[in-house]
Amino acid sequence: MELSDRVIAARLRQAQRVVVLTGGGLAAESGFPGFAQSQTGPWAHYAVSELATPQAFVRNPRLVWQWYAHRRALAAQCQPSASHRALAHLEHLIPEYLLVTQAIDGLHARSGVSSLVELNGSLQRSRCFESGEVFTSWEEEGPSPPICPHCGAALRPDVVMYGEGLPQRALQRVRQAVGQCEVLLCVGEIGAIDPVASLPFVARRAGALVVSIAPDESIYTILADHALAARPATALPAILAALRAPA
Ligand SMILES: [Zn+2]
Image (tube, rainbow, N blue to C red):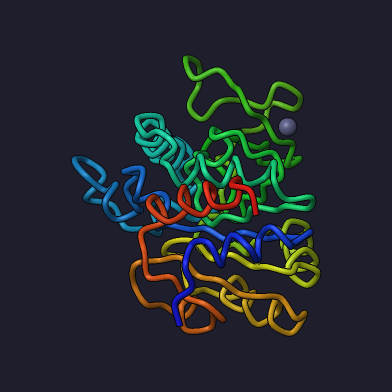
């Protein structure tokens, strides 16, 4: 069943607590290439296990750091899309709002969302390999990878690498918010990987309305109470406009 933008807007207007879930679909809208699409030029010769695992970082921290620096540079060339901007505006209209993303490109943060969980981390952050202290800026000109200014250990990208679990505290915050929300909005293509893929079930058990806005069918569109088969960059600004119009 498809709901019109106006009807989705009406449900959002009534809601006090809304959780939005995004993933690779929004990254693609902004032109941020996925892992495999980023493996161009010299990077094409490496396996995932050489570039993006904690073991690879221990073996060859310089190579792994430079791989993520390459992806950070790709992200820097991208701009937040109409979807990112609409979801940032939506935060101001919902009393309790949480945006949860699988994307590591940092585009939601750049679009100005403050209530944000980046479940897979962000290319815009690094963290001390020893203490876990997180940094948002570091010296790129010196050693590669850069050195923790507090203990001298290497800095690693603050992203979830292959073989690593999702950060437990962030996941707990997300589960709690989804378990209390009235609307769960699944936007664009989202990786169908647990535990994220189970969030629509959590929302439905809590009595929330699950809405999906995506052009292609997925587990999220199938699980949704209402699936809007549309591009988020088109649908979200229309929903936002309807939400702002007098009821
Ligand atoms: Zn340190």
